[in-house]
Image (cartoon, rainbow, N blue to C red; front, side, top):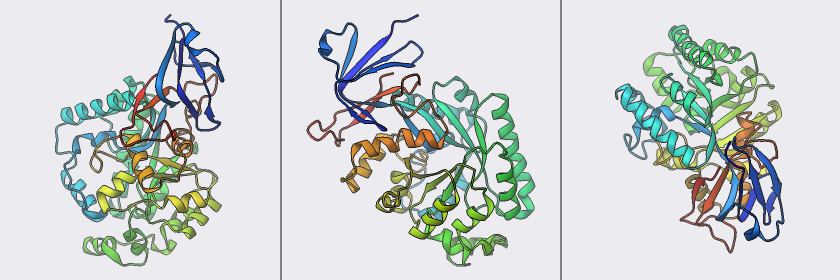
Length: 393
């Protein structure tokens, strides 16, 4: 058995308890946190200690990612808008050989691990990444995405998802069947998908990413025009809004991840928060900037007391899967947000969303991992333009 590891840094930041001065963290060979000693004296006299320049935080959690789309990096231009982006994805998806897609996914899995990501909420439309995830040290919760607005193909779309879920179950990988969005499933398909999670597994639903989503419920906008051209009925428009459909079709006990939220209103937030017992509002700011030049309403979500988490989306709409780069963009737009709060968004809140109780905080007896935030602004204990993240444990 390898010896215990003792690590310390200029600063240690636990998202739940705050800044811990002169902390020494002791991990066993399996990565379990055995001891956290604050205010340790004479760090330089502790035998075998590893001292880092920077900030130590728990391993990070990315609750919204598409590992399977890693091969699409720089394949779709910026600024297409959501409607154009969806059209481009449908056109080019799956054209590359599986060997290429798998190689790109393996590379990104390695990058995520090096950067200190310990858990990922990964959207899946295929099973080809599952053997990789079996081998990976990263915990993947696989959100098997169901979509299909044409009622005539609902059975086929559902069975496709069930087959992918069956593969995940045989490999003992955590999974949920989840609706893609409130606008992309017929009414019977949406109901079947939600009912297929009897154990109250979390759902991950794209929500209010574009004004076209609300417009569609009123029969206007680009999504509504696409429905008309395809002669597909919007058989769920009677719910009145995306929030109304979720509230009427999803039980309040089901944990919910709402993804993007760039066009969410205060009324939407109030209705959702009042209905659901556990909601995580996942923002992906660099993806939003890439697709539509938009930015999530961070100040509104904070004011309403929402549980915020940060994801990266896919390399089809992002230049990297770096959570630190997401935080830099958030800091640049909202410099008043304390680093402790930002760190909570990429650790504890994401862990709670994925029901990964062992991650997200430096709690003795858990295995959260440890990440070094390097090249920081030490005077203000904040990120700088050059900040990076790398795994320590």
